[in-house]
Length: 250
Image 1 (cartoon, rainbow, N blue to C red):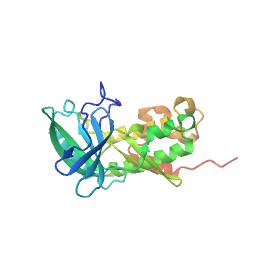
Image 2 (image 1 turned 90 degrees about the vertical axis):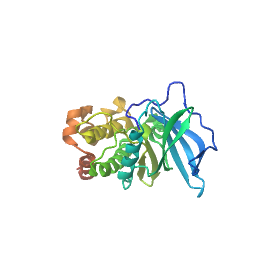
Image 3 (image 1 turned 90 degrees about the horizontal axis):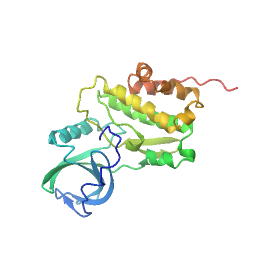
Image 4 (image 1 turned 135 degrees about the vertical axis):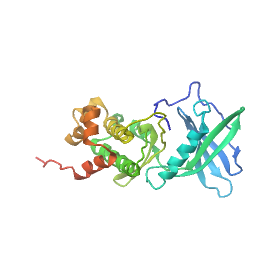
């Protein structure tokens, strides 16, 4: 839930929690799943029901104010009806090595990290048509967030779970970000991140000049002002994709 693209904490995982540890007499900790700038993620099982979930523990040196994780939990709750947002379940705190550690429990979603899926593709990129389908799935989900006058704040391929369903993709955004400073229109930042995602999915500069016209019309040469002017929010990008007039063949 950080805008920084740092994938790992200096020196590796900081907590090292052991599987089997019980939280709030409700959850049993499972396997370590990964870590990033703000904290670590573990598999979790609800003791009474056996339902599987995930938990994110926040590093106390980067989340010094508990009000921040409470605000984050409330943001998850406000977005609970948005298809791409993980369903929030529980906010808690424990003491670890004499420090308070906040954590959030959420649903365990299906799918693989988009970054890893892309690396498994031929030449580590998607075809333009697949990339457009993925971009559309992300944009539709973010449009729901924007319709509630909220933003995601941290859209990139390492923050997206993807699952193929027929000819389409089902996506989940696995993080949210709280800006510690004032931003005039955070929704525009989300849109630029989605456009940057499309650019990445097709293979970046090596493929962009040869990409279809629709891709170039969306990416706008990665010029922020051009993107912001054309797509002030994710809904505008969704409308563009749905109404795009493809040129006649031949």
